[in-house]
Length: 250
Length: 164
Image (cartoon, rainbow over all chains, first blue to last red; front, side, top):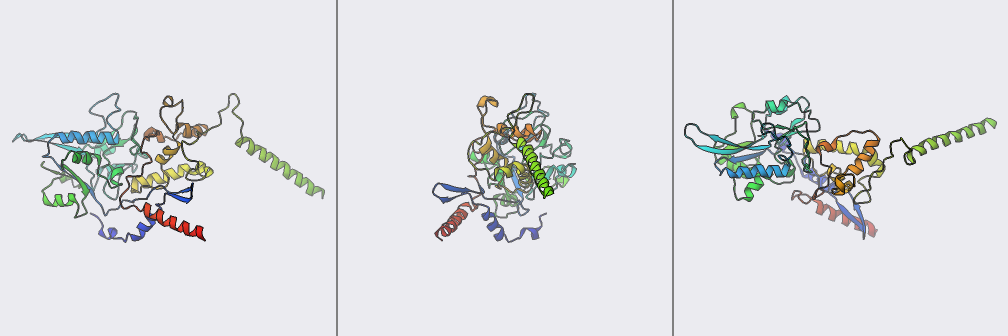
């Protein structure tokens, strides 16, 4: 539940302050430049937004392979495991095949961190490394993660992975290291720039709208309208963890 | 009178000893046999001036980075003044000791002093210290950021100041 009184702040003053820090290279005289702050400061994340995703499990199942590959390429996982073992390799997002034993109906769906409003991984973390941002994105602060894997035990969706092996060639925006736990970040580095997560972008480039990403709190957003239009489900909604990832057709 | 001159001479002697002690530690000669070599951090790949004067950066870079990493990760404040990626943007240099001089990394810069001072900070167990294209790229910022407007305003103000 978002606290509406916290969200209705006058942002005009803050925008001026943000703009004040936005100067880049200023020409003082020909050939003389003053280099100050490089870029506009954005944030902090607030609870005015609640990032979420709507996934249509009725979509052709091969789009989920594209989503998984896009995630690997963006975040740089799934390539370093010299002693690869499918049971322990990092899996930020995985394709899960489901079948109704009575009717024989089959479907596939991608499962990744569900970005719960009441995340059990955050409850159990002994160091505070497992954390939820104000806008609902659940992350691991690897600076203080001790690799105890309590969160992996607590996650009802088995969506966190432990890095067992040395990692090389990390992406600049996504540090990864042996001995820490990691999971889907909802591409927080892209979301903060106003972009879509890599999986959503890859799929929509294919012309599919099987994944919709957006702000669930904004009634005008595509996702909020879709969620109010269609009957959607969240996996294990009986647990009351209020995931941000909604599914259709499961 | 005599005691004054004695105090004066002792003071001068004291300063001389002090200056010698400080001087010898700052302007240390290349390491003698068996001593740890004095650090010589690599010159930056680009730029003449860091975000702060060199002595400030030497003393405080760890505080700048640690303070901001928490704000970035936990609060989602992006685009602030200091970042590890902007360190890499300028200070990552090639060295024959690292990957045969094929990649620009921070190792020739950071590791010099850290090894000398026995600092075992482990940034690069997780962060990639190698330069990758687009690392300092700010082009994908949100559409509402006001950089250009601010620069225009500041340029106007500076121009006004120059007229006066």
